[in-house]
Length: 195
Image 1 (tube, rainbow, N blue to C red):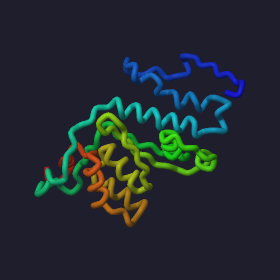
Image 2: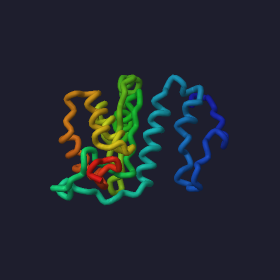
Image 3: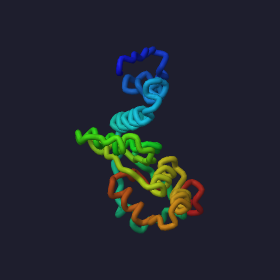
């Protein structure tokens, strides 16, 4: 690195909680933030965070996806829980991490205006077979997916999305989740009056 040396001690990383080799490196993005020579390039650590999320997604099993037609005529109550693929990872960054990562994957030149632009990107990624799908989400969609991923139910997720974008289209959002094979189950919420 331009004549600079970096001392890498074992204690620089957090030891994984599980004794699985695939979990070593989870602390690498945080470690990159501590390197003085990278202090003016925060996108390096942020891109490492994206790379780690991709590795995690690939290491997570996919569950059989459900289809919309399976729930035709089913009374799911007022706010059903929509369960999403366990490999789904949602990342928000102040930097254009997916744009930079995609440019590198396509082996195209990454312009400095892309690399150093402080532009928030909300990334959704999940395992699909033996590869990972990655998408940019707008603020409302990110809030919607985040709420569902964390088990807050459809009503809460929709409310969060609509608070960010009154034009949020719930039907399109649900169709997209099913189309992208992200939905693994839909069930009546525990506090639903239908129970």
